[in-house]
Amino acid sequence: MTMIVLGSPLAIADESAPIVSVRNLRVAFDTPHGAVEAVRGISFDIAREKVGIVGESGSGKSMTGRAILRLTPPKARVSAERLDLHGQDLRALDERAMRLVRGRRMSMILQDPRYSLNPVVRVGEQIAEAYLVHRRVSRAEARDKARAMLETVRIRHPDRVYELYPHEVSGGMGQRVMIAMMLIAEPEFLIADEPTSALDVTVRLQVLAILDDLVQSRGLGLMFISHDLNLVATFCDRVLIMYAGRIVETCPAAELRRARHGYTRGLLESLPRIDKRRDRLPVLERDPAWRDAPAVSPREG
Image 1 (cartoon, rainbow, N blue to C red):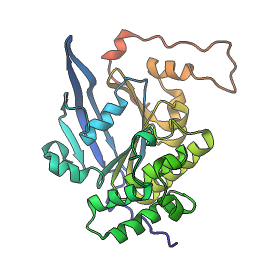
Image 2: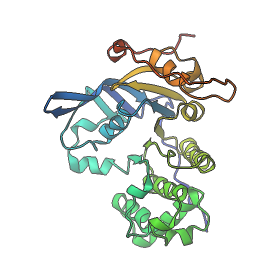
Image 3: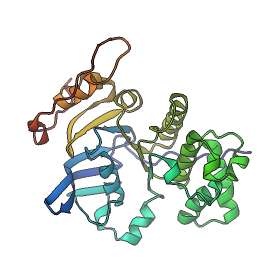
């Protein structure tokens, strides 16, 4: 089978120019006890790079990604001073226009393919359908593109896998199918929400290699949401650390071990290390001042 290349890199004059710009993003939910803010006024830019977002469960990582795609629950109240994709104001789009953006210009890889794939439709047909939704092509062309995408994500025997149902593929293969489905329309921006958490170490490295290769070859921006600080430190270019709905620190991924914020230091200290044996790992002790203190930025120079 001839491999189809995923198009040329994005035509961006400046590689450092933001693909996604977010300013003062807030996500709140009304409860019987008052409003609860899941995301509290965060701001960041993502260019042609891999940006990791880390933090504990409930820190607002996944809600941030869903808010960018406008996939928050109906009762969520989302506001932002700026929410742009290559300069296009996503806040101004109605739902019909936003559906054209999702998948074609922005995509999201979810955590577990078992809950994302339709169990009664062959995986190849689901990938082809994702292409048909956003491109005016024949079904035959969509099938060829889907088979080529399976090959692109390093699945052996793509013709055979195309005909399988989701329950017939392994977890690692299912995640590759999800990657193929999300990238077949050639988006500019990709959100990966814990894409490797359900995979063993070997398969995890293979999936990360696929994502890295696609980011480099396509020039897209990647938001990589994870709990795994070691993984983010080695895979990403920059890291945003979230706590209680806010970004409390930003730093280059290679310097994550030298992070300065107390919360980030606590997360790092709670990780076991091969080169440093300890009888008991310390428990993170939270400072109430962290909720509203200014974010820590990278050291100058």
